[in-house]
Length: 264
Image (cartoon, rainbow, N blue to C red; front, side):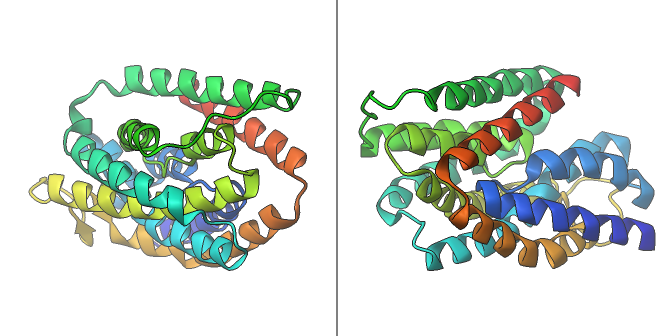
C-alpha cells in the first residue's frame, strides 16, 4: 500500500503541472497509470478500467479547480462561454458515464485517438494561418460542442481539455483564456462524471476497501495531494509563455495523447 501511495503522489505532481499548463485534467495520463497500479491493491480485472476512469474523474475535480482558481486570478476565465458549456458538459458526461462501461473499449480508444490527432494537426497548421476570421461563439454551437465533448470525455476519463481548448481557440478565444476557461469547465465536468461512476459502481462486487463506487479513495488522495499545488505552477507557466510556443507545446501533447491511445 505504501508503494502504491507514493506512486500516486509522484503521478499527481506531474499531472497537476500539465493540468495548469494546458487546461487538461490529466486523465489520459492518470487512467493508464492506474491500470498498472490498481492490481497492487487487488482491484479485480473486470472492474479495473471502471475504477481507473472513475478515480481519474475524481482527481480531475480537485486538480482542475485548483488550476481554474489560479487562471481566474490571472483573468483567464471567460465566464460568458462557461455558462453555456457547463450544463451541456455535465449532463452529457453524467449520462454517458452510466453506460460507458458496456462499450467496446479498444474501438472507442482508437476513435478518440483519431479525433485527438485531428485536433493536434489542425492546431499545428493553424499557426501559419493568420488571415482567416474565427467563427463566432454562439449558445447553440457551444451547447452542441459541450454535449459531444462530455460524451467523449466519459470514454477516456478526461476533463475534455484536449477538445475544449482547440474549440474555443478556433472560435476566436485567445489561447490563455481558452486554457483557463477549459480548466473551469473541466472541473465541473469532473464533478458530474464522479457522481456517475459512484452511482454505477455502488453495487459492484469484489471492490477493495476504501472504494466509493468506482472511486478508489487512497488513489484520489495521493494524486490530489500533490496535483493541487503543482497545477498552480502550471497555470503560472501558461500565463507567461508566448502564445505561439504554448500552441506548439499543446499540439505536441495532443500528438502524444493520440499515439498513447492507438497503442492501448
